[in-house]
Amino acid sequence: MRLTLPIAAGLIFVLAGLLFDSSYHRSTPDAVYVQGTVVGFERPHPRQVYPIFEFTDEDGHPHHVVNSSQQAITRFSTGDAVSIAYSRLDPQRARIDTLWFNHRWVMAGFFVALTLVVGALTRGDSESNRAKSEPGTY
Image 1 (cartoon, rainbow, N blue to C red):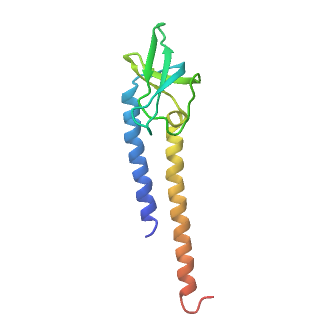
Image 2: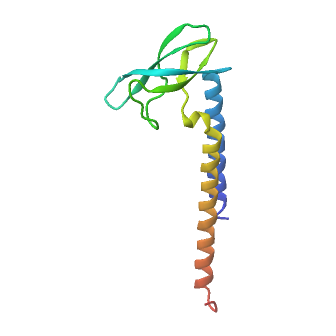
Image 3: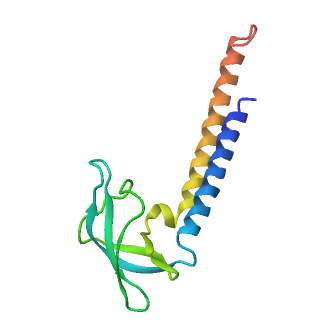
């Protein structure tokens, strides 16, 4: 019965992943991948840092874009070369393509597996403790 909680948590991670992936695909439909360069940072508040990058699309047009998500997991410096994903329909909605986005399903699978393993280990420990507390067991 204790395995129900980790399974529920795993399902929540999968659902969140599906919603996140859907949002990801809507932000850059039919993404094209090119190299770009970080040219600065926008700081609307002291703790918020959005990388600004430049890239040239496949048609040779230059673009100057503020990344739509904060610099949280990956830290960039001015002058860093970065992989850019953009949609031909709207290149101004381009984003820096980080490890999280490239391998998002692997990362989500890791979180689900970790949740299930921790749940199974917790269940095993509780059954072991219960067996030790029953009379007539050693």
